[in-house]
Image 1 (cartoon, rainbow, N blue to C red):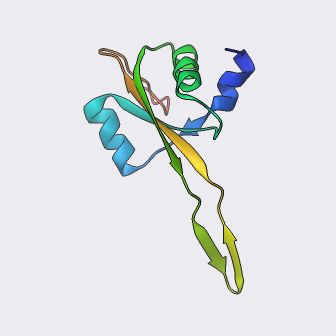
Image 2 (tube, rainbow, N blue to C red):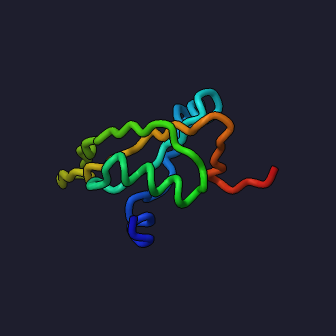
Image 3 (spheres, rainbow, N blue to C red):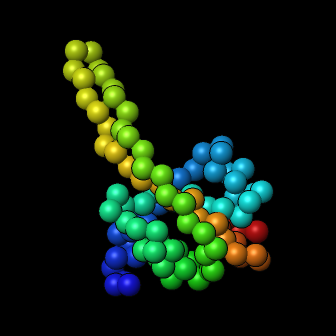
Amino acid sequence: MNPERVYQVLLGPHVSEKTTTLGESARQVVFKVARDASKHEIKGAVERLFEVQVKQVRVVSLKGKRKGLGRRRGRRSDWKKAYVALAEGQDIDVFGTPE
């Protein structure tokens, strides 16, 4: 994989109450990824960037929400997120917090 493509595939961590629970209980991390990224690209990018072993990748494509401000109506962009399951004994510290 091209080194520049690694940073184009992974856009950032997706943080919510659900993803925090997944990280603690099931060793999964959730990332916001490029809409054209495949499972193989996501797996390679995570393994290369964080130096961990990835067991499984699940991908979800989400539709953008409809929003309005006064009389103007708009729509947010569609986006994609990836649930990355890590191998036994592997861990990613997404926030870089000291222990």
